[in-house]
Image: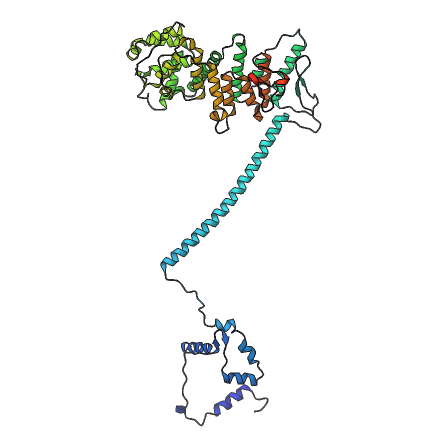
Length: 505
């Protein structure tokens, strides 16, 4: 063969090699792709056994004579390309519907868990951030309450103390670097005014309880109501009757409540331009029953007017004479229900002796039962008036009214028994969610437990200022026992005999 011989010349010479053969002697080879794939599979199967390359002996000799290291080929594992030469290139789909649905269910559960996990983490982060912000705000609020909105590095605060002359001394910075919270400053002005009058006898003695009540303007509604109650106690301190004074306060508050409801729902109340007491009461009942759509069937009604409910509301407001006149006007109707009621009511209001009456009349009307209880008209089961006596104020008024009029009724409850019951209940009974701490404070004041009320209030951060000034007022007017320093308590501000450790507070 010539060295420079081209491929074309080689092809031509190769064709000449078969020119002496006839066409019939040359077999035709026809192999499709399927046959080629089958033969290739056989070849791979022969070459790879148990994951290793298996060479034909003849191939082994041929490769060895050509300088190929056949031992290295046969000792190692077959190449991955050779092992996977005939693997399917398209995924094989599972035709099992149950298996498919199970797989989809598992995937859905996993996806849902992942989404919930992410959502929970996000919500936790948000709540944690909000909680930390709220804690910071509360801490700031308590700090400002304690320091009186202290500002400036060198500011000095007002410090109340008892001076040598017995007056309440208030030393404060007059500089511009001390900013006192408005409510603290209002109370401080009252104490300064008191000190000035005690230091200068020529000045008239101020009405401190009234000044403190005005200083509480802008405080919460319940705190303002507490100051009004304290003003009542101080005004009647010469011959103080706790039950009667507390009842008068609760009756006045209920009248204000009725006026508020009528003003809020004038169309439903329908009381007219200048309504009388009875028209106001009837208008209030119209609003209450209007919410139900009708007067309840279990009430005793005459001409669409709930008679016993009307009389109970009159007495709840403290309108005793109006109640007597109404009962006398409706005597013919009332007699059908209780023939002796009007006579009993007249004797009760005139403070005459009342004979014990084991009344056998029906008490299906809860307003009738509630009225009978406070008038001492027979033995009234506790649950008979439960639908009427629902609020804390109604409950306290009912018990205090019975105590106030104990000399005219058969039963003889005492204020001490009511006080013991309220202390036994404790603050959690009246404020289970710890969102209305002033309710129990007012309960204690209404029962005449002044020292306990202040001891309870001073332990609430946001009302410590009010607690101190209420103690100042009650101690000043002689309504609070202040023990000597030897009797000081350390676990609370109360000491023996319901006295308050005023100096420590």
